[in-house]
Image (tube, rainbow, N blue to C red):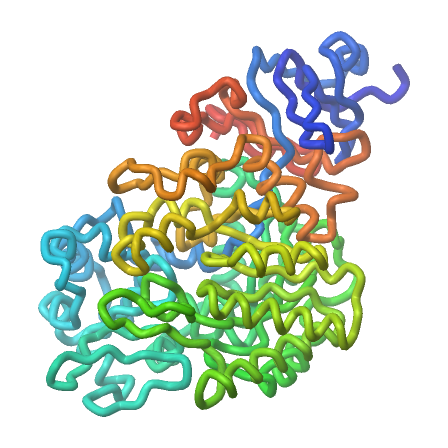
Length: 566
């Protein structure tokens, strides 16, 4: 034939993820687009002398995976060689973390990420035990140490770091923050939410060159997971004090430079982060003005595009900072909005104004919100903004949406708005959350099925570095709702079938990106982004999905990962 395919995959189970969930035997690629799908015989006829033909022998082909909430630069910068790995299973105890701190070379700021009280031996043995500055003081008495927990919403620092930050008895936390103290009023070394900025602003931020190196490393690692698209959910001045500064404006500059150099081998969507945790409407206005023009025109929009704005509404349930209607067990209060203002009413008004400003400026909104009361407030603000300035296809969405009620989910569906949930966090924290919010609320947390049945195109994501970007684990978690620690089912009524789970990582994520016309399914003319699994996905037990290897990843028509060829 005059214009043959460049790459053909035959004898497989090709899941197109189209409207009918059609399956085919083979797929052909020409250039950077899908040429055709069909039977092995029909697709094989599209081969020419230079076509590479791969016999899948029954293996599964999917569209390239789209992790729709993944802090790519922060994920890489929070791993060696940039920072200590203090997450499970690298460490299993406070003693292990202290030993890692003691062994770390150098004498400047030492940072790390990943610790989780649910997987620290001392905390499991004694529910009242928590990490303390003294644990780190013994390992590093003179060197400032700052270790961020797995959620990114809490820091554990030593006495030297507290001293440098000027934090002592009686120090007031910034709005939306918590400085934990003991019975004598002494800081324990735990800083939550906006209080993290008191230390984070002292740590030298990575350079643009380091951020570019981190992005390249992240993209290569994501290719090995079959991931070809992701959303950087919040870059800008509001991220200067979050996750080691990796969400700051310089990361947006790093992406823009990589894209201009033709060196960005992923499809990246960016939400701007104009306001910090605890910020307000003035920060949104000021931050958006500061961010204007950083991503220049003329870049390939299929590689890099800024599509919206992120706002922080409240904290996270493990820290008891998610704003809930009912109190946390044990006198933990209700949590609160993480927004500028004195008292709930003023904060809620400020949050609504932040949302109004971004909506009226034409931005898609992704709002970090977890508690049921905070979710109700955000949905009400979405509704008010849209009624004041109707936009037929804004596609706003809730980020995390842990405790979204059926009523709020129905209101989102009415306007075509979405939710972006984190099933791997459910898998990792289910037993812990039984203690934090009570079993009934814990079982409901991340109601994927309720959202799907409401008519929402549910997206699922890793929130890396909060969890590893292993979408296979997340798909299994959506199908099983089982706890990593105990293996028990948590809210099995929220389980969904494979088809729903896969859509959350492909076509639904493409819709969130305003890109469903050119990626997310395997149809002729769509982007040639493919993920090949080393087994039969549809026939596998959900428990076995995380162990299915990624045999091949194709990005933009090129093979960028091939198992055994690294």
